[in-house]
Length: 368
Image (cartoon, rainbow, N blue to C red):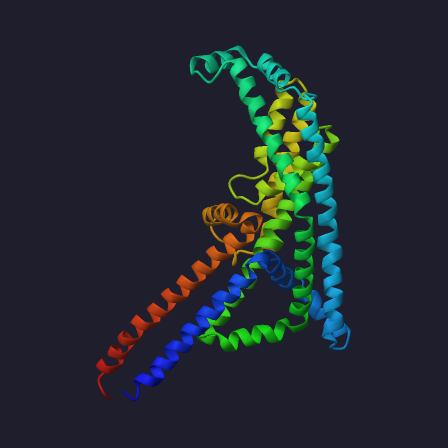
């Protein structure tokens, strides 16, 4: 009976810890995106914070303030400029579609006339739709797409106040992560119920995956989208920034890539008789955009933190489907932690099963 009371107290204390932790997470849910990106920026700009702390003679507060200012200049201001330009182009595209300045029927008719005869025969033979049916489907798709774009713009306009509050929370948390991040990491290690080896392995995996996902995948996607958008601009393709953003988003997904955007555009240019622009777009897409991933991923991501492409694809799509745009970071992060935890479990299990075997071998050794 004497041992039951300490065990009951310990179990009750664990239950209290779990309940309070769940309540705290529930409290942070309205601003989980702000906290998430504060952690991500703190990890990415940590080398700058360390360098500034050394240069300022250990004044971590001033170094944290300068690091936050660097994040604002490098990340936030360019992001706001791009988003405002993107909203303007999306509004212009919606106005052109709604005012019938862009007639999908004319585009379909032009492409249909440029198709070889055997292609049109195949379309009719396999009941893939007549010209009028294709025109109606395309018109309906563009109408629905324009409505979605318009509704998203209205949602962004209505959520401006919440966005400003979220940015303020992110910058505030980011400052203290820069200032007290080292002591906070030490407290997490000391409070962790796991062993020191397991805790360090999981925290290091968290940091490496954040760096690999953002520094690697996002930078590569931004470069690919920028190259595609600039190419579209110089080729005179409307809404070049909008198509560039689409290429950035699709470049985050392995086995999909930016080719799903520039490929159909190049095909349309060839079918419409603009062979020079089509050839330029294909050359840029294959020789420049396609090689960026192979050239930049090894130095930015590294082989040690790279997960299989199918895991990245499924986890990224699952994360985006569940929690939105933040899912492209959270999805691969959860997948990487899943792999890391099970790898630790397998490692411990192998060590446990190997220990008795070693002891038997030692006991069977004849005495000298």
